[in-house]
Length: 487
Ligand code: ADP
Image (cartoon, rainbow, N blue to C red; front, side):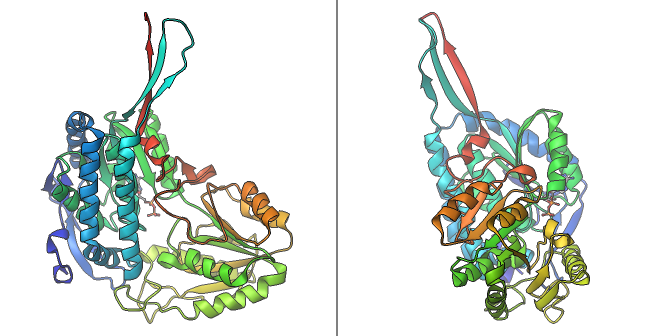
């Protein structure tokens, strides 16, 4: 495996705590497998509660000195880290495809996207301004300063093994926080490679710690239970997010929650249909449908339903499914067997209740055990399970609607509110629908919306807080009010 990498030092099997590479105190390890082949890539140290406590202590010990650095010093270190990520982008992308499965071109895209958060927050470190507020009384002055919140914990998922870490570590470090990161045990190798590059960049011991462990409950229990940890930033499923929120309540931690979505993708009669098809392709099938902003329900107006389905099918039939390291592959494997089973179950429920697969509709067994054919379902109805569940696979269910009001009501008929998309050329409709959608993000005639410059986040049960943009750093600071009297 190391032979695949130009810099074999990026393949790590130990966790990174207090600036050193460590095994679990228990000595336990677990295998990291390649979802495309089922092969073991490497055995990694399996850290538990005791190891996590050490990481929290390391982050705590490093906090004071890190808070005392100037914003410029922190920015310089972040820039070095960013540059090292860019210098090693090919290796990082290969590691990502190996452990996560996404096609290599997409993995490269994620490395750049991931690095962009470090770059962005290196700049934002220097813009953490406070205020001088017009006073309320003679002889008094009113000011605010912004201070890093303290030790931060980040729990991250497998679908973006680099970007979900940099999106949290970038602003945390910029604000003067130290961090303990628990990556998904499906994809620890990218996280560890990022730690190695942070180490090379000269980020001091204890400022970044990466704890890899199979027992998420044990590691998460320490991170959420510790009074030292002042904030949790979580990206993952809504179920786990709710659990972690409950756990964080005991110590009244600040939390940012980036949870599940159920993104509507609405195509109105007045849409540019070709653009809508391209948007749907990008939004739906990226990462084999395994992103929380993937189009989950494609709502198409009556007048263009058949034409849209036909055009979409033509494009989907051009896809190549297979190992992401192979040239020309667009659809990689799903992350694990459970993910495949979930997609199979959602499709079979829809089909048993009258939906039809016009392309795909089953496992892509020729490619391997964990592949699912890129699929389009037509005649899908609101009462089928696929309407209300996050698919997380390459399946596009097409729902039919007649009026704008109906489309908006269908789109909002979910407890989730992360990303939404719609295609229309009518300016009045664009404003009406954009304002009516109960979502944190709206793509208008656009299927790809993620960027470091814009606020990413959801409403309702999709979470709270915003990542990226000028707002993202606010999640990692406290506003302190200073009242100066006796003047
Ligand atoms: P997904 O379905 O995308 O894997 P999860 O919410 O299960 O989403 O996982 C996201 C992250 O949360 C992963 O790092 C996972 O290990 C972690 N996780 C899962 N269960 C818990 C838990 N009980 N406590 C803490 N972390 C957890």
